Length: 266
Image 1 (cartoon, rainbow, N blue to C red):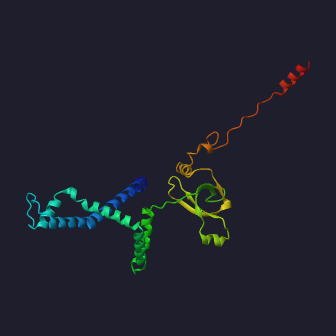
Image 2 (image 1 turned 120 degrees about the vertical axis):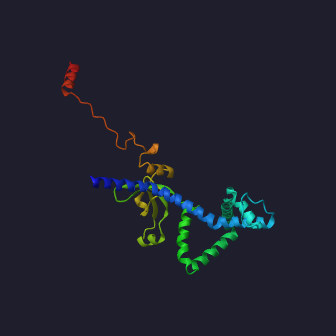
Image 3 (image 1 turned 90 degrees about the horizontal axis):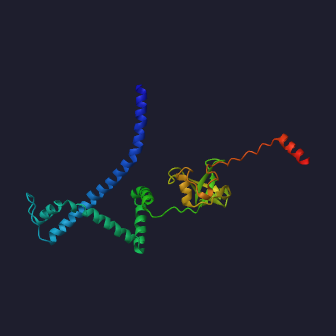
């Protein structure tokens, strides 16, 4: 009985952990990034704003009960920190600065400067081992480039006799085409159910795929629903995915037919 309890406990615990952990990790990453930006950059920007106010304006009245330094900078710092809504100014300024950096690097001079910075980073002794990997991760999540699918095909995958829907992404790699001596090779993404953002990328011969008259959206809906949602034009007549039943031929009574025939002759 105890073993059954612990087996159930472990099974449901890990099932609950698998359900909760992705959300917790997502929240932790978002909060961690926010705290890092606020503590390491936003706080410095707030201090800079306080310093500029102290250098350019008269000191405000000290808050009640304030017993800190009597310098103008100290009074401005106390005035600033006494207002909670000003603590996010540094973070907002960081967002605006990142926006203008993006605008700059989108220009001709910015792209040229970015290439120079990347070349320098890829040649630096220590940075060159870290920067490319970090850049691949950030590019995957932040770049605006999207995978373009040209058409929907059916391919025998994962083995002969089993057909899967795939999305053609383009031609095959040049090295594969040269090695197999096959000019018409396709790169096909086979999405998985029920999450089509994951799947397998395979290379197949053009002669081994069948073009399917479906749009990309229709193919993805078919995959997400595990084949339940079919386009109207591709749904079988009875809607059950199996041949419609055929009616049995009527049973003919040979004796009755013979009697009818004799009566007509008479």
